[in-house]
Length: 551
Image (cartoon, rainbow, N blue to C red; front, side):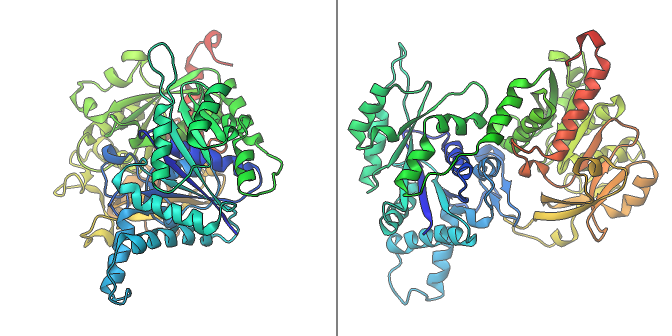
């Protein structure tokens, strides 16, 4: 029988529930178990696809085209289990399904209620995710929100029922809570006690307690917490502040024997732990030398989570390239106000300018001309440039305006009446009226052309990556663009769509229509992010005097 772990949170949000759940998944995989991660989100949206990045951070896309919460990105970076639409369960999906069944008469005239109909739907979706991969040993279910939130109650009730139905040897509750530090450095356990009490009021007795605290809890504090929460003292763990990277958290939990306690409670025979990839990753982290500054020129710079996977992929690349990456966040609207983009990007800028430029995805007209200016500056100055989705479209617009002298070149997303629509709506998007789940989404194959940077990065001709977009390089201008020097570096297998463009006679100027950041891991960086950072590092070392170069 498959084992279930339900991860909940209390006291407040943003305690790192997703990282804790993912880290536990990484540890269990290190023990040789097959892990499946599931996220239950209490919001009524059907998925995260139509939300503003400022509302809920980035939208993470799975191979099968599901637009999900960013926590699935954490799952992908920490674990290797399959991720699909089944891994993301929202209140919107649950109620949509139940109401559809009611309209079809499938409840045989009965009154439809939260219990049992809503909770049964939640349970059936969790069990369906568990069954999707027959080799799954453990399903870790993260319940969004905090205990006490009215939106989370149906999910907690479904968890309670599944724990009861599965038996205590097959399911457990792991609760994440806060240990705040007050004046004088004293740690207070009362919020944790109240949080566990709230869980008990929902009918769930936590089996494992993970306490978010600034420092590791001492034995006396752990015993005190255990006494007042009915949890064994050896099942109270600390998720303390690490001064390195979140990818150290699995090792922090391993040292506290979290995985051993969980396996014992689930009745799983303890196996040898293989965490070599994680220790090796931390060794590379400590061995990085030198620094490169990467300018992220985007639209959603005020919220870090809006480009979460981008930032993480850059960090992964820094590990493989053995160099520290400093993120320089630049609102593209700021470049539109500058008389000279070099004043923001070049050596005369604050902090010494940037060594490389990355333009990520996005929607809407705001700040587009600032991105075009950044691309033009990078192309003319030989600065490595990486364009992702919108960032590739920006390369095409900039080339049209400044190389082909089509001053009106634009995307029909931003200027429907442009004389040169070098980026236009995909044919199958023309009559689309609904915005949720209707873009070109999910895994697709791109075919790299010989002698290109993209082929060198992947070292294979057929490349599988994920898409999320409505607009594409306009084929009517492909011939003129190519003849003027823009390199068409990758196409769809049938040659109908351009998937990658590169600048000629440039150290590394590349844009892709897909999102390589979604498949990057701390133990295996995305090939394109790796080669981008390597190009930035090598160019910086080439222009620095030999006596000052990093080894």
